[in-house]
Image 1: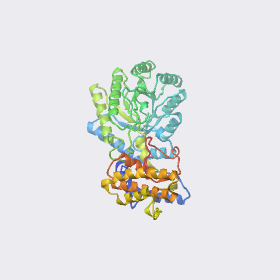
Image 2: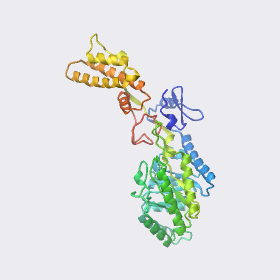
Image 3: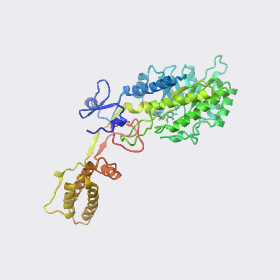
Image 4: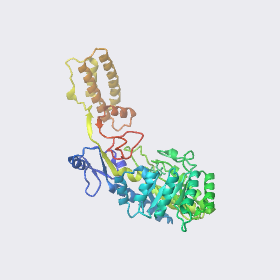
Length: 470
Ligand SMILES: Cc1ncc(COP(=O)(O)O)c(C=O)c1O
């Protein structure tokens, strides 16, 4: 029975039972039953099935890992998390997310005005909202309005121009007001350490986001001279998405931790949080030797807490609250795309399809022999002979020396020989075999749109999959 590599990437979310794939939940419903039920109601698909309990599972796992790390190291800061809306803004997802995250003070991250409006309407008052990306005056004004509504909102400065606008909006908004209100302020730092994973360029020194050390010092002075230093609360960075290796994160944490401590020692008394952005990776691989993530969630949480504590201790400053903005990790596994197959381009040949004659061209007789006598010990040699004969036979057809039936016999025999060789050599990790496997694979014409239907995607390779990451 084929397992689709579930043991590697499935995270116990699926169970294969009696040849059906079942979602691992109390009643373990099978995807086939669910799909049939929906189709009976007239919906043909593509269908995107969402399983909110799997969103909850990720949230619980993330919070538990940090809770355990905090306990282990006796860490004094809090752990908080927000979901970056750029990863999924669909109402069906956001509503489910806010529903299953109750009790965790879980909030939302916004990177655009539209996302900010979603965050302002969907985040419970008190839960954190973080605002990243470039912001114009309108967007900054919206942040002030959110603060006035009572939201726990942090607006991250990505450049000094933005800070000037914040100062301007602050003056206009709080002009002649006895109890001035302003959002909390974060500073996105431009890391010296390089980014990693997908969108690596959004981290690292050449990134277009974030303040250099010189700009940070300037921002500090601007905040101070405009009475906004008491709002400076967060240091933020994001090193990239689908972070496969933990090492660059550790470097970034040291850098960010030291910047936090230096700003605090300089007089940023209200500073109390480090936002480590997103990037927590999802395992997509089906192959034991090519895994995408070299760390566990436990290691991730332990590293963050340990390194922050170490820096806070050595610089004698308060241990910061830790924020994460993991998106992919929270959302990727909760949905399954079921798409209707419109056609199967089958190359499922078998011996019965052969139209052998009493006297066949010698190369076809040879192929037939190779097929019948192939053993593991000489399978690769026979395979190479087969491919060679195939080329010759196709040339013979082009030159008019063999007929269509001979060409069909060639096709079938080559297909059968390749399959037999792959079966005999199945424990050998040979590139040549993988390429041949592609050649004999069945092809399906499936009705879905990569842009509309896939909720998350893997850029580098198309894989045999259940539509799960997505
Ligand atoms: C600032 C910021 N935070 C969080 C994320 C989410 O990243 P991920 O989905 O990899 O966790 C992104 C993604 O680009 C981002 O730019």
